[in-house]
Length: 86
Image 1 (cartoon, rainbow, N blue to C red):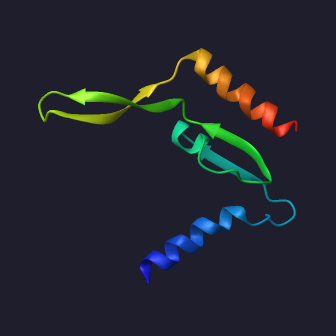
Image 2 (cartoon, one colour):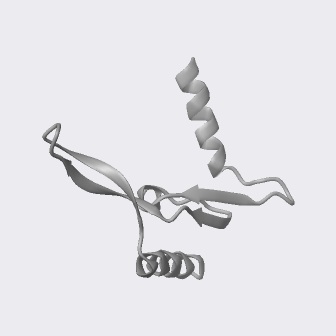
Image 3 (cartoon, rainbow, N blue to C red):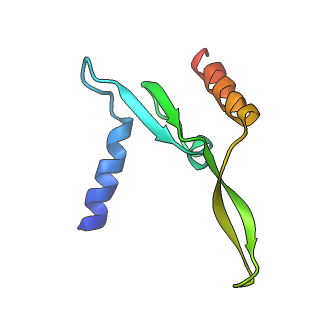
């Protein structure tokens, strides 16, 4: 029952918002290539990305958050603007 409720809440992002309500998305680079959400007015990117690193202590690869460069941030912004102008 809990999984169904969570899934239902996730699906709400695809519904058109009521008049006067804005869709705002808080995103990471992981979300950038996953889905397209219509009717989004603003996208707020936290400026961090998960990058593959190596944990020598546990002898395993891992994903660690790190700050993106200004050039990468501009590229994401420009890609978003190109998509929205279509």
